[in-house]
Length: 133
Image 1 (cartoon, rainbow, N blue to C red):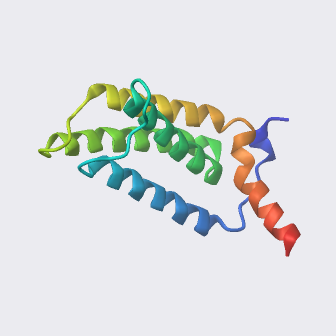
Image 2 (cartoon, helix red, strand yellow):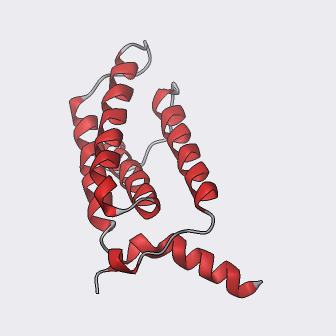
């Protein structure tokens, strides 16, 4: 059985979706602030882009059925492109095609992870919380 077939409706869907939108707001803020935190590794900003967008995609992939994932992915890639355009309009950030590529790579990684055990993390969290009550 594939993990995506084991998915069940989330009881706290609205909460999880709200957290997802807060995550998008955090990405927007971090992307447009003058001096964002950075990883102290080679190409750290590209790794940050990829990790951030992979996190967003896997989060939303848990909330919606597989047929919708292509729209989620396309929306997140568009978000990355629009943010890069907005950065190019500021005097303190720069427009970079490689950042868009890193964003898209993260989306693809998150999409792939949506077909693995990671797709059941929120279900597990809900089951664990229900068992403790």
